[in-house]
Image (tube, rainbow, N blue to C red; front, top):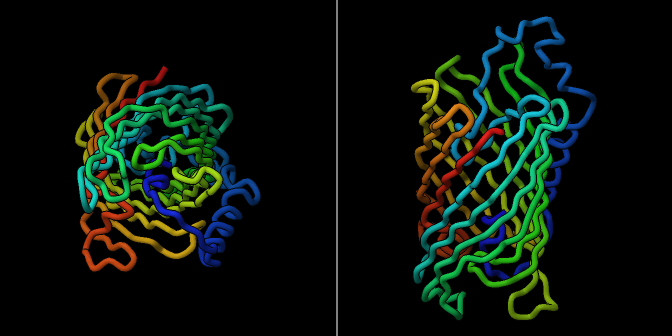
Length: 315
């Protein structure tokens, strides 16, 4: 949600039919019938050990795996997301998410999160006041469901999650009041058993926020995110790879495209303890364009680089 709320734009627009069609088809595939059992290796007679597995944890960087865990598994952690550099001025933002999650039923997880954010903003045209502050930034909960698992005849696993979010800050650190959420699709697969893995994510995010200057006004912001990541297992505790992330900002609720950006960077996952892991990734913007701007990067809607450092602990 931090990326969705990164703008200070006053916007409006209509929803294109193509996005509603994609969303409708995905939702139908996710919840029609009972596909988990159809692809469950235990139910089709295939021994679980014969089906290659993607290791659990945040091995793909920003991209999420389709892993859910076993009923009763629970844990928490701290997620630090960074965004650095705008077209003009000096801009740094680091959002902190403190979260707890638990597998509450077969293939179903529930998590809650509390957010803070630190902004260092100087000489930005859209920000009348320079700012250097750490502030409370709301809360969220996330419900995830694994739609189907890998089997001998199916190399993929798919998880769908929804994360409603309340936020108190804009991307520039000004106070607002925003309600929104993200709909997330995570697909993963084993490329080389025990060595090489892939994950792909599709995330649709939108929020409605109060205007920072005229509190009686509200604006809608939305964003499409598509990511692909591969990671190589160097040992039982170390994974490293690369991730390509495409972001697209929209005016209103998936109305006119305001800008696009492509990020590429390395990922590193280290199991620092049997019950603790560290995920580090940094991705500079390698291509992009804001609507109506001739530049080769979109630094109006996005930043020069994004990063994540995540510490996860199993209880």
